Length: 271
Ligand SMILES: Nc1ncnc2c1ncn2[C@@H]1O[C@H](COP(=O)(O)OP(=O)(O)OP(=O)(O)O)[C@@H](O)[C@H]1O
Image 1 (cartoon, protein in one colour):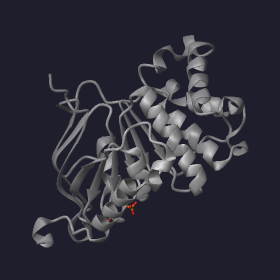
Image 2 (cartoon, helix red, strand yellow):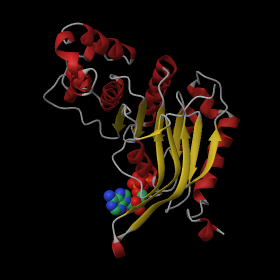
Image 3 (cartoon, rainbow, N blue to C red):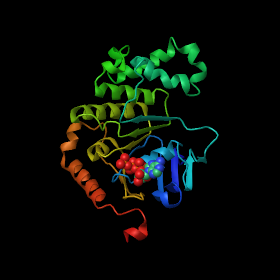
């Protein structure tokens, strides 16, 4: 039986603003995300990558076209989304454990029985996840006592603790140095392999996209649309050394070429 996609954009277009101030961000574009996918969105600055994340997280309604969640338009059962951005934005007055536990306090169905479980089961759940990313010894620390890489590990944990249907990542490692960034890639890959999560990653780092994703979607210049949906063939788990191999380097160069020469989104403009 064919699996119903988690999210499907059908000819979705977005124009911000009205009248002379309007900005056409996306021209009608299609995108399908299946359960367990790891999709990276790449493209020139301002092409509409974050706009697509806002659409699938239901923070923004499309100007045209349809978005299906689990095969339905705005289904009766809302999709559970986890998000992480470049700035970890952990709450400074809470410990790392309390920060990670936060979604369980506010997101249904966990919210309802949080009180009953908060001393036991939920704490174990948080500590298991912190252990998986190597942060358990820092669970009682304050965010300001962590390095940048540790903060992003905690940020990933907070985005995942409520078992989201879809994990949305917008440049989550953009502010980290290269070594720390590569460590985080391996952590995220391990979480993806272990938990079978579905991920959409927006990144400017093409090595990051090629290392982490199962599909890389390349966007045209604004107004954006997806001009290529490329499967990444490398077996998992991917060691970091794969990034020096010729097939990997060729893929990254190819993606770079497509972005540098990316046409504008409207096909009549591109012709
Ligand atoms: N709320 C808004 N109001 C008006 N224009 C907007 C708004 N949000 C985004 N835009 C415009 O829509 C276009 C797409 O923006 P978006 O942030 O989705 O691009 P992006 O590909 O994520 O950019 P970057 O790679 O630089 O982060 C840009 O031209 C941007 O200026």
